[in-house]
Structure formats: C-alpha cells, structure tokens
Image (cartoon, rainbow, N blue to C red; front, side, top):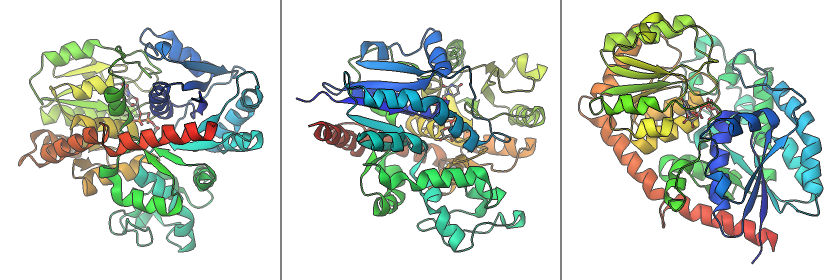
Length: 458
Ligand code: UDX
C-alpha cells in the first residue's frame, strides 16, 4: 500500500489554522498517511508554547514545520489591514522553504492541500508536478458569493452606493431574494478598486485549477449552494463540521489537541458548572475583530439590561479597556481566551453572541446553541444572514451596535418564546452529527478524499 506524504499549508490566521489542523489530524489517522504542516515561525512558537498545544498531534505521524519569517510577523487586522500586502509578504518569506520541500527527493511530497487563498502555493506545486487540492475555511454560501463577484460586476449590481444597502440582490444565482447588498462580504462596500476585493476575487477564481475543493461544511446545511458550486467545481469534498468529525473518528486517541494561538482559560468551565441550564450567553468575536471602547460599552450595557448572565471573551490584544463594571464580575465573567468548543457544549450556555466567523458558527450549530450575530467583515456578513433568514437559528444584528438592540436580541434568543430557535438549532445539530458518522455525507466525502489522494500516489 502507498504511504502518502501530504503537505498542508494554511494562511497564518487562527480561523484558517483551526480547521486545517483538524483536517490534518483526520488525514494522519488514515493508515499510512503522513502530514507536514507549514506555518510561519512565529505561529509555530505560539502553537508550541502553551501547555495544551497540539498534544494529540504529537501522537500522530504529523510534523509542524516552521517557515523562517525573518522576524516578520503580522496578524490579520480588519480596517487598515491590507490582505494583498499580507499575502505578498507571506509569499516572499515562504516560497524558498516551500520550493525546497517540494524538491526534496529524500522525503518526497505526494500531494499538497493549500489554503484556497494562497495561489502561490498552487503555482509552486504545479511547477514541481505535485497535485494540489484547495481548502477554503469559509462557508459554501460565502465561497459562492466570492465566486460570483465577476458576474455581479458584469451585471452592474456591483459597485453600489451606501444608500442602497437594503436593496435585494437580483443577479446572485441561488441567493436572489435572500441576500441584500449589506449581506455581501464587507469588501464589496468599498468600490471596485478595493484591493481586498480584487485580491480575494482573484484568489477565488483560481479554485478550478486545483484537483478538488475541500469545504468545512455539511450537505444538509448548505445543499442548494453546494449544488451550485458543483456546477463550476465538480470535485467538491464537504467534510465538516471538522471538529465534530474528529470526535467521531478519533475517539481512540484521548486528550483532544488544542489549535489555539492563545492560552485557554479553563476556569470558566467551573464557573459555568455553577450556573443554571441555558442561563448564560457566551460572547466572543473570534481572533481578529477589535471592539472599540464605545462598542464594548454598548454590548455591556445591553447585556446587563437584558438581565442575562454572560461569559465574555476579551482577548488581551483586542485593544481598548475593560469597563470596571465588567471586570467586577456580578452577572458576568470575562476571560482572555476560552476553550470555546467546550463552552458551547456546556448545558449552562443558552446563546452565543458571535461575529459569525465560520468556525464559531459551525461550533454553535453542532452544540445546538442559537446565535445573536454581530458580523464584522468578510464572509461573516453572509453567514449571519443565513443564520437568521435561511436557517432560522438566530438573529442578525448587522451594522448596529446599540444597547437597546443588544438587549432585545439577547432576550429574543435566550428567552426563545415559542421555542423555535432551540428547536431548529437542535434539529440542525442532529443533522450535523449524523453527517460525520459512518454512512453520513461528510464521513463518505472524507473517505473519498483519502481514496483519491491514495490513488494519486500510486
Ligand atoms: C477568520 C474569519 O473571521 C472567519 O470569518 C473565517 O471564516 C475564518 O477566519 P476568526 O475571526 O478568528 O476567523 O473566527 P472563527 O472562524 O470563528 O475562528 C475562531 C476560532 O477560535 C474558533 O474555532 C473558536 O473556537 C476559537 N476560539 C475563539 C477559541 O478557542 N477561544 C476563544 O476564546 C475564541
């Protein structure tokens, strides 16, 4: 039997590393598979430095390979952050190590799984004659929107004026009447010259060059959109939710590995143990979003006025200060970084105030926890619309940060009069779990991916 050696290269940001590490773990568990996982040296240090890092990965045929970063390190930041500069700088620092690994005849690479926004990896692998699969770490619905941007420009639905945000989209196949202009990825609001839009659009349009596209989603959740994507990219693997998939496939290996770039504060789980069932709203805006002091005050005031208990993640690097009222405790608890999957699975947690990053959204779906969505940038704008308008498992608070609205939406979701949010969230959670057990769609697609990689190596 062949022993495939796979090189996995994520974009160096928490949301991307989280899901691609989970895929790495699943592939390592396939008999004979070995994985080399590339990350810049500064990410390598952060993943290796804290106590809970990658413990399970150490027991697998897995190598976390640092790329020299020449002292350069940059985290994604919305606003002034320039995605093109970020990717260009990654290309400059990573290309030599990448080419070296692809040319290594002593330990040849059989196949590359590249983050689908890193076309320089695709080009290097093509040059070396190594097959490449793409993985995108966002939802199918957001991917489809990015893929359709050229059509929206051609049909002149893009660009639009800021006073047209409420207009429904008419030329977005499959999403007519669902999305409004305000629900498009945030880069679409900045005109056709936006470097972010041009970069992400260019990257997305390279996808059909890859052997196939891997998505962290499941068929039941996004079936109509997945059918549309298949018309353009026939070889699609839907293998998510990856964290749930890991739980079913890797039960034999205990101590689940952490993929966090920050140290997790597990004391909040003990605090949750003391709270009544479904009484706590968990508040977190992921690894990138920065909340201003004014916004934080509106959230705090809205939460306090709702009368609900809350567990709030305020990252040490997220800027601003914590109002003393929050730090003082009372109905709330603040941590720097939480063990999010465990928090969402805790019976005390009854709602999630989230930025709707795709990992967070999927983690909430699997836990059956309804959401209040405050999307900030990128794909989050699309995800939050689907959570509210299509899946009916939460409320979309897009473009608004006001204590009265926060209070109302938190009450709506936590009190859930009629029980509809929890019922639909429970049904979706069941469908998610069914997709990752033997016979489920994601389980079968992961098997197909493993088979296809093995065939390529023969
Ligand atoms: C980014 C984008 O924002 C997101 O929209 C895209 O889909 C992926 O990349 P991020 O903003 O960090 O990611 O959000 P998200 O995708 O939700 O990922 C955050 C991850 O960090 C989740 O897996 C979550 O469990 C984890 N997390 C977050 C923690 O473990 N602890 C915390 O306290 C907060």
